Image (cartoon, rainbow over all chains, first blue to last red; front, side):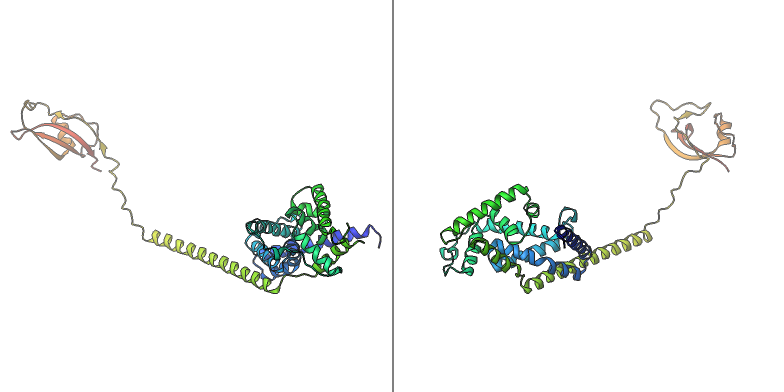
Amino acid sequence: MSANAIPVTQTMIRETESAQDRDLLRRFRAGDRDAFTALYRTHQACVYRFARSMTGDRMKAGEVTQDVFVWLIHHPDDFNPERGSLSGFLIGVARKFLKRRYSEEQRWVPLDEATAAPAGVDNGDADTERLRHAISALPFRYREVVALCGLEGKSYEEAAAIVDCAVGTVRSRMHRARALLARKLMGRGCTV
Amino acid sequence: MNRFDDAMSRLAAELSEARAPRAIERSVLAEFDLVKRRKRGKVWVAAAGAIAASIAVVWFIQHKPVQQPSVAAPPAAIELDQPFVPIPYVLPPGPYERVEVVRMKLPVSELIAAGYRLQTSDLGAQAEADVMVGQDGRPRAIRLISISSFN
């Protein structure tokens, strides 16, 4: 397979997924439970992963995922396929729920124990755990680009569409986020 | 690859396996069913409302009070609005004389014979008129109300 064939294949896969989503959405709007179940099973993982990257908490991520799909049930006509993919749209909805949750949580002062970095030996798992903790402590605007581009594997263009800002802004936020994460982990022997 | 990127890759790989718990799917589908039931209920309520409205309309049409056709004046009737005209060759009532007005039907031919000029060629017609009767019981003046055709 040539190097040019990969993007073409990815584009074809996306087109197929998009067509499947459109068909499922049409049936879901008509009240088809199976179509909604298929939509949920297709897209719940990306919403859940994004929510988990953002919150660093399984339970909160689950709640946000539930909120997103319940919202979709009540707003079946709000998604416009011409403006992007359904997964991007649902992540955008999740982002709004997370933002609301974040602003509500700002009113509460967390306990020191809850925010303390995990201690342990300096092996790979510890680094991962520290990184997870450092990501969840990032400001929201940096955390979301790390979650989307760094962990979810979205392109800067896709992330820009979800976050609703310029691609350059995503790129600079990602750069800044990496610097912040590196600074937090620097004392523990990490380099960027 | 440094430790940071390594940790990032591990975290991404770990997350890629993450799935929402099954309980969430159950509760989301329960919400879907609830919304669907509500929508169906709304459709039934709307249909019932439409049926009730239709029944009410039909009932109203069937029980609508039948309007009696208005009794229109015969087409030949000529409405007149005229003042009292003294009867020819009869003295008019005095300045303080008490009079009575009596409405009656008179043959047109009689009125013509009495000297009235009426614009009708039907001599068999009846004229409804207010007749002013003096204290002595004699008619003094007549005011025409209408002339009904004999036919």
